[in-house]
Amino acid sequence: MADTNLSHINSSCWQFLAADKDEAKRIQRETDSLFADYSFYPEVDWSKYGYFPPDGHLVIGAWRHPDTIAFVFLLDNRYMQESGAYSQFLIYAIGLEDEISSIDKKIAKTKKGLRKEVFKAAQTLGAASRLDQMTPNRSIGMFTGVLTFVTALINAFSYYLRTLPPPKLFSESLDKVYLILLSLIHFLSLGLLIIVTVICALFLFKYAFVLLKKL
Image (cartoon, rainbow, N blue to C red; front, side, top):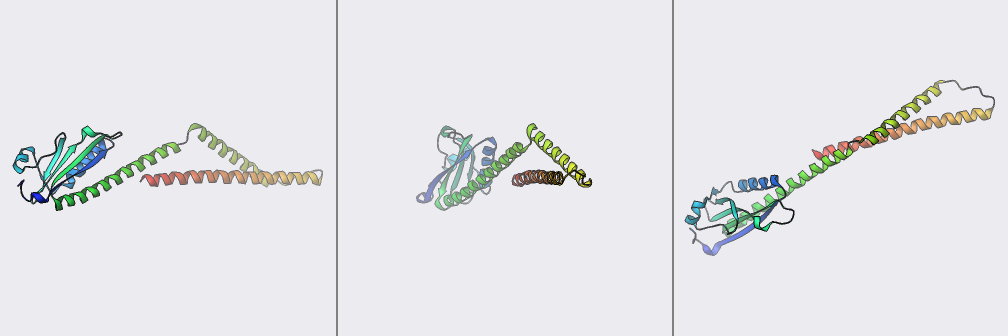
């Protein structure tokens, strides 16, 4: 079988980088799934079919096409580690050009899917980190509590003044000063109430936005 259509035999190699142990396992699972329609190609059959993996690599998995000439090896590329990578894998395939081309398309699609998973995982971690950062610390909690208490106190005092009849003062000037002070208290209470409401609304909106991105 090794010498059948040798002029049309081609080989190719693809690299996969794993950032951590979980991603390394995911790459191995995806590779196994990618060649689910192939037969396993144990080492005892290598001499029989005449196709071998390249030297210097640990063979993690091997497959052969049951109906045509195509042999695939999943290799641990431990001797060519790149900075920052937990581990590297090589998929080495040898066989008829058409099948190698088909494998290339499948691997490109698999790589795209793996990149999406990594990006989604990074988004989830980022959202979780932002949630942790949004957890109020003690000083922020005290400031919010004091602001809310002062707002409630001023609003209660403003409401109490509105229920009182206007005092009888000795001059019109004092009456005007009283009305101005009363108006300032009313505006201050209203302004603080609006500020507290806006702060709470913004915080809740941001918290809900982060939660939605995490889903």
